[in-house]
Length: 102
Image 1 (cartoon, rainbow, N blue to C red):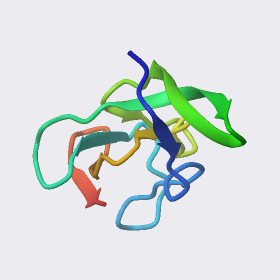
Image 2: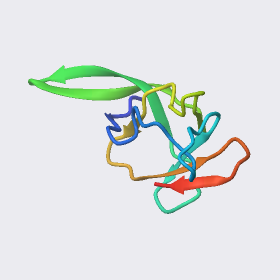
Image 3: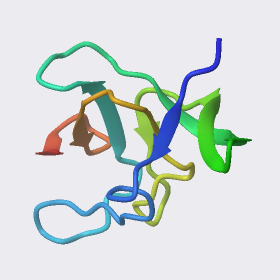
Image 4: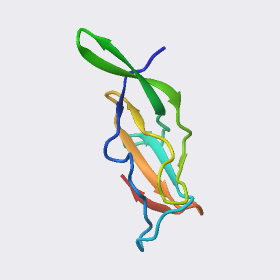
């Protein structure tokens, strides 16, 4: 079953940093249903389908949850969200300490 998705413009390309402003190398971004501790699916890629001059995007491949950050503190994948779903993001360092909740 295809799931309609939207690209998260807020977090794609964000360089995550710790409370001292250091790059969050090896950190993790957990995705949850908003206001809960229930994991919420995100997608690494999407395909498009045009219907009556309207373009729709559908999830193609899942992200892991959590999404790892690379040495530059960036997600090494795109972040596509289920259309209409609300998310909470919990960013942790490599030791599991919570850095921020978005």
